[in-house]
Length: 494
Image (cartoon, rainbow, N blue to C red; front, side, top):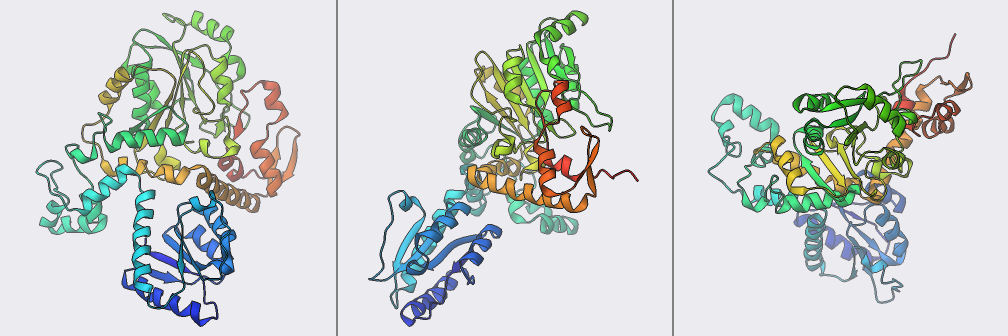
């Protein structure tokens, strides 16, 4: 991360010459300098090139308007404004909270300014790097050597054979040096939730709207079992979505638990729907309990959200309606629902606490967020026994976790913070809608029995709307996920 964008030239020697000197001083300190054509070109560059680490511009030409637009794209990006004795600075206290520094046009001042820019760039990188990731980076950079596991000793074992060197060259030195043992005290402990690991969990919980979050390195299959082992005592009854992941049926096999199944719908096209509203009623549950041998009133429920054909539930309705004290949403495929208005109220962590209930949500952050494979999260909202829960957590968590997996979970927060997460989601959403409109001949409207032209607005209506048939059937207020509805191509009859 060493690219600095410079706005110019300005066709004035007293401005251009100091900037030329600064350009040379920055390159001497390892920076790469680039010159956007105008403000629009600069904004496009920032949006598409996250390696950019600073912008230099003339305050008289661009002033605070440019700063505001850049701040919408990256609120942490350092901005360097050049001024002269006649420049006016009409900046409020709130605006000064930006990463904005001022320099005066002057000859032979380039080295001092370049040094300051180097310092501010280091602060920027430090600010955007989460504590656990930063601690791991620092450990690797310091080149420490420990006489403990793993046995490849920062990759040196691979350098003892020809095939090993191929492996080393393919994955790179830093990947292997970052594969370290839990005995490295400065990085804390995943199992004890101490040091940078504790900071990471608190950081993630704030991001995803949870009260407590746990990082899981064995995938959501393991995360589901952790919750099940804690929330469902042996001999008790649990409500389970019939279209659940195998990890939940395996959890039933591992414990003496009586399942009562919630049965989803299926339409004429073979697409699995959600669980109908009637299935969540106390009367329906009482009837199922009466018909199930050894069953008692359920103490816990598990809902697959989204369904495997991409439907999302109104989670608030389920939280308030379902008569259980413990509720788990298996959201393996939709870890992004907390970060865009179109999914408001569709996340397990949406909304406030529900009195007398504890809500769990599991997410496979490696599936549709930028985490490594097997990276998963458990989110909790409500009162629970942390010590007992952690026993279940440790029961299913290795004492040799992969630190690269754990470290990659933490930067997700920077990818999903309110403004940037919304923007990232919107860009993909718009792109998929346009692609769907171009590749679809038409989309069949089952409700009216007619064919709808595959234009963008109609596709959007199909994606966020709800058919009258669904409303009459009483399905629990679901919306189709955009990637499913847009990319499925339904050909018109000949």
